[in-house]
Amino acid sequence: MIQADKTYQVGEASITRIDELRLAAFKFDTLYPGGEPQALERHRNRLEAGSFDAATGTFIQSIHSWLVRTPHHTMLIDTATGNDKNRPEIPPLHRLNEPFLARLAAAGVTPEQVDYVLLTHVHADHVGWNTRLVDGRWVPTFPNATYVFSAIEQAYGESLATGTEPTGPARPAPALGPALRKPADRVYDDSVRPVIEAGLARLIAVDGNEAIEGISFIPTPGHSVDHASIRLVSRGEEALFAGDVMHHPLQVYEPSLNSCFCEFPEAALRSRAFVLEDAAERGAAIFTTHFAQSSVGRVSRTGGRFTWQFI
Ligand SMILES: [Zn+2]
Image (tube, rainbow, N blue to C red):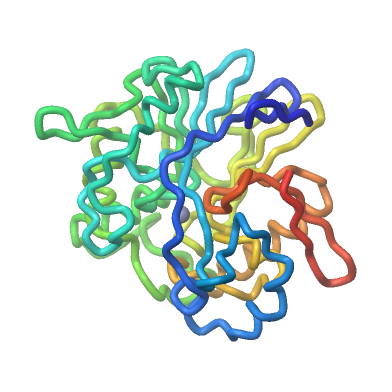
């Protein structure tokens, strides 16, 4: 894999991070409530300065989108928070005004050129640029794109947004264990329903099968009801876009830490263990959504422990 100007080459695909926010918002107790503080102390000296402000004990994180260009497609994986979104419950994300589309343009891509938007899950900081505010209405930002995401995430989001009892696919699978929290209000209404109403959504089963050539959605539920990690395979090389399976490199060293945003904690633990094992075994590059620095790395395993290396 070659890296040039923050663009990674994985087989025939080139992958570029499109930045939205750099966050220095959370300390251990807020990001990992209930986690034992020794978990941080044990690994403090492994955390690089770009990921941890040792003076204040604050985690440094990122919110961004991944631009994936193949010989056939121009895709975005997750769409960050978006501008003008009303998120009073999450102050760092409330009514942003960030030059995200200018950064996309600087990478050589206009909204009209994006032909696929792939979503790991339906949370505020992953679906925001699905839409933008035009004359008081939320309209799809990428008018020529097919937005591909979980049918279960859609059904669950719709039932919560409309206050109807979840039935059928909208009802969380019992194997997920109890739900500790729900997705933030309004996210479905302003960032998901408009792309469905515009006829741009393709709702899929997250089952590991190929959804688009070289792309599959791997089940990693728990952070959300049907969270997917997106696997890209090209010419024998692999990338795994792991969404919110982890929020910070500390969780590679301490996989038992669940973030304060994980909805189904029991399943989130299982999915994190799966991703770490899988990535270590396959040697795939992991493209994260919230790690700072390059946001990309590899996992290796020694005995029962995992190590993270940024690349
Ligand atoms: Zn997230």
